Image (cartoon, rainbow over all chains, first blue to last red; front, side):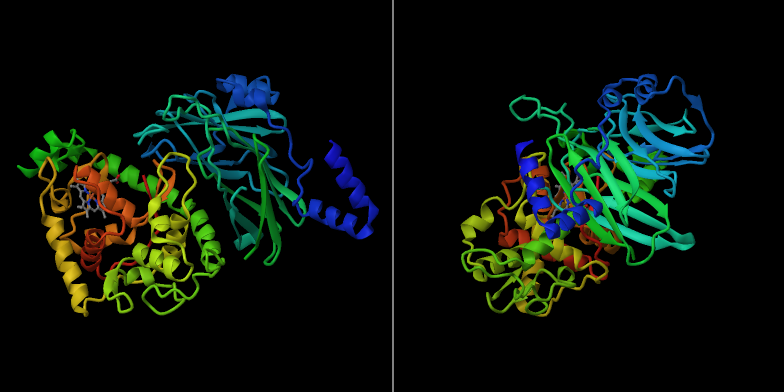
Length: 157
Length: 104
Length: 270
C-alpha cells in the first residue's frame, strides 16, 4: 500500500508524469484494476452443476446452438484443442469444462459486444472425458457436450 | 521475469479481426510431484485481458487445466490495419506481462 | 523376424504394423489432432527469445552473434538449416548447426567450450529452456520453406556421410539394435508414432524437416542433438557425446537422405 501511495504522489506531482501513467493505464500497460477477480469457487467446483452455481446460475439447459470443435481422439491429454462457438443471441460468456478433471472448470471467457461468441484454447485432460461448453446468454445458462478420448493422459511421457 | 507473448492480429473479410495469443507460462497444476515426491505448487495464469484501442475486447479466467504455454483464439469487429491490440495476463503468484501487436 | 525381436525386447513398446492395422481410423483422427495443434506451436515463443539472444551483446567479449557464419556467409541465418551439416574451411571439418553455433559463441563471444557444452539442453519438467535451445529455435525457424540440400562436394562432407551411414546400420548395445532396426523397416510403429524408414526419401524428408520439434509430452522444444541422444537411449547404447563427430555424421547421413524435403521446423510433436 505504502509504495502505491508514493507512486501516486509522484505521478501527481508532475503533469507530464501523470499523463504518462494515464496513457499507460489506457494502453493496458498498467492493469491495476483492469483484472476482474478470479472466481475461486467456480474453479474449485467438481461438477457442471456446481460450476454453474458458482457462476450465479440456478439451472442449465441443453442447447443445439453451441458448437464444440475438438478432436475425437487427442494423442496427448496435456494439449487438447477446444474451440467453442455460440449462436445463442446475446452470448455474454463462454466456459470450458472437463467432466473428469479433478476440478471441472478449465477456462471462462467474457464476451463484450462487438466480440464474436467464438473462442478457442487448449486444455489438459487426465483421461477420456466429456467436455462441456457452458454459455451464458440473456442471463441464462446453456450447455453442449462432446466426448474426447485421450490416448496419453495429461502427465504422460 | 515472464517471457513475452506472441500475438497475431489479422484483419479478415467482413471487418473481423482474428487474434491468436501464445503465452509463455508453465501452468503448473499443483497436482504434480517432483523427483523427491513433493507436490509442485500450483502456478498458473488466472486473468487475461485483451484490449483494442483501449476498449476491452475479451477477458478470460484460466484455471490450472489450461495447457502449458496457453493459446487463446478470438475475434472481434471493428479493427483496422495498423490498430494496436494489447494483451495482459496475471498469475496466482502476482507475475504479470503485457504485450502488444499491430493489426495486419 | 526382426520386428518380432523388437516386440519382445524393447519392453513391448514396438508393435509390428499388423497388430495396429485395425487402428487406421484412430490414426486418421490422430492426424486431425496433429493438424489442429500445429497453429499455436509454443516453439514460436522460444524463437522470439532466440532472436533477442542472437542480437544481444553477450559473453566475455561482449559481442553479438550477428557476424557468425553458419554456412551461407557471415551473419546469414535464413536457410542455413537446409544446408547443414557442411564443411567449414576455418576449422577444416564438417559441423552441424549446433556445433557451429557453439563454435561462434566460443570464438566471437568468448564463452568457454566447457561452459557451452555443460548443460545445453533443459532436462526436467518445467525447467526453463536453455539459451542454446532458444538460439537453435530462432535459427531453425529462419529456414522454414527452404529445400534440404546438403553439400556433398568436399571430401570431408562425403566422409561424414559414409561414416554416418555405417553407424546407422551398425548394431550395438545389449539388444544388438542399429538405427536401421527401428528406422529401416516399413510401417514400424512405437505407440502411435510412425517410425521413419530412412531408406525412403519421403520418410527421411518428413523426419529431417520437422526437427527440432516442440514435444508436447515434455512441454519443451528439443534439438536434433537431443533427438539423437534420446535414440541412443532407445538403443540402450552408451551415451552419445553432445556435438561429437558421431552425432554430426549421423545428422549428415539423415540430411543427405532427406534431400529435396522442405524445412518446416521447429515442428510440434506428441
